[in-house]
Length: 79
Image 1 (cartoon, rainbow, N blue to C red):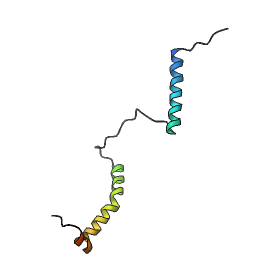
Image 2 (image 1 turned 90 degrees about the vertical axis):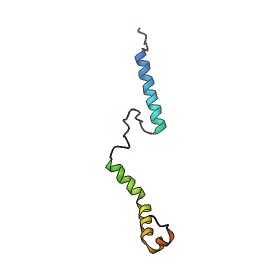
Image 3 (image 1 turned 90 degrees about the horizontal axis):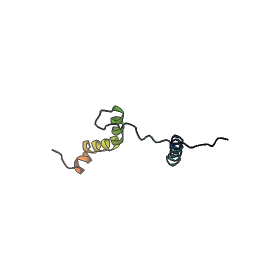
Image 4 (image 1 turned 180 degrees about the vertical axis):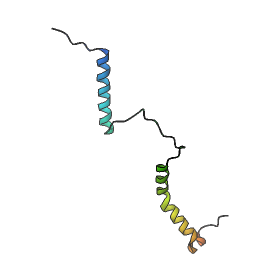
């Protein structure tokens, strides 16, 4: 009868599998650690449109107040 031997390769494989399962359990999905991070300086139309949508209500309100008579009385004059 042969005895089963646990090699170093089997040990590493079992540890990786257990680590991966624990990670999925903690984060509810697999987490990618080696993904390339996108630079914020690079032009990205999708990101710039999303940023504009976030600022739009405040910008609209500011322009409306600035152009109205009430806004001219409330807001300080810009040079």
